[in-house]
Length: 199
Image (cartoon, rainbow, N blue to C red):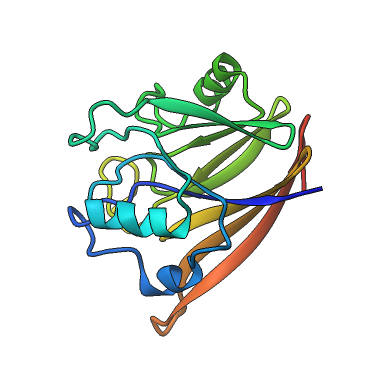
């Protein structure tokens, strides 16, 4: 059975809110290992678009709330890997934002097993009624408005999906700081089987 690595990221805001993708992430994202990239919007500069296309020519992008230079982008898309239908959207069209029931409705309307959404700049993954929901967060850790308490800064994060048949293995990469301020990449693994099993 063939697997294909799929990179999921979003809310980059380069150069509007941050200078670029963190160096420790850029080092991990090398060409030839990733088959497809799903970008959940707010890919706001040409240089980053070319960097992502260099990693994987199959770059799929949906419109974020700040993608003003690309008005023709779709608000959502669906791709199929193995037996899994994977939908993705930025999330600004989900009302109320990030609401689990609203995301479930969107997943049903798109007829998908997995729904990826953005907009919150915070990683999240959970299963609900047999469907798997993933927000990869912001790959740059770009600041946002309305989602965070004043004490919190977004943690830069992205996810890699390894799809094999009806199983999706999610690798979550987060750039975390220890008590002395040193940044390290933490990796967490979450598995989902079509029909609702999460490990």
